[in-house]
Image (cartoon, rainbow, N blue to C red; front, top):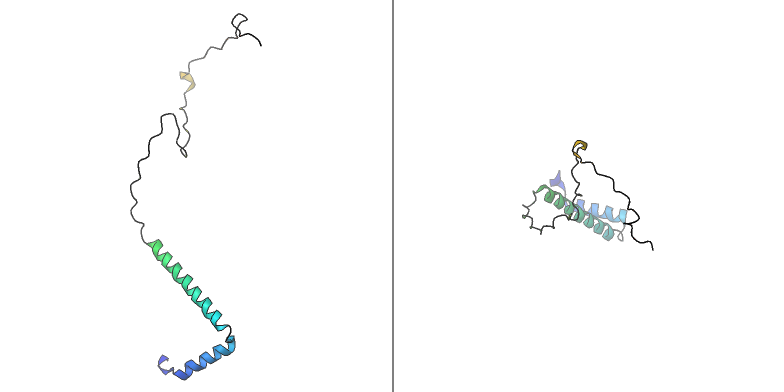
Length: 106
């Protein structure tokens, strides 16, 4: 069927398109079709790049160690271990200071 297309057929199709859309709207139409094709090509390229495996990561750089007792930023808080009640040594209550040992009132 494509073998029977002649220059007259192409000319008639172009004439019908010009009559339908007008000569002023054709450049805008061509520009929007070009932009759509550009966006489509970029999306296809991004999809192909997503399918490729990522390059091997470089080994992480060693960071200086924080001093003991300091939690680094972003690290979970350090929780002291839970001690079972049977192993807890009872604590004697603190006695209130007597008048002889009390600090002077101001």
